[in-house]
Length: 84
Image 1: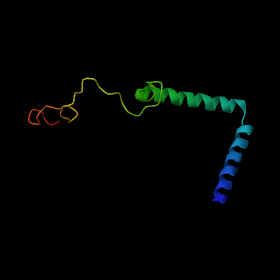
Image 2: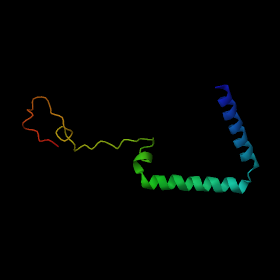
Image 3: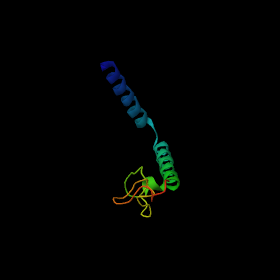
């Protein structure tokens, strides 16, 4: 357990040293590439970025009633509802 922790600390320190050694131009290119990736993701999956928060579930459709969801309302018989 402690060996793993030491390894993770060492890898993080090496990563920080590499960041310090990079030039300003390389950092600018990385920021540009990351912004482009975010723009592509926003175009391809608007449900994730559309609501102001990350949401993996699509919004519920108001036209879908209990019969379309496979549920039967109280008082209805199951003979009146078609299977979906």
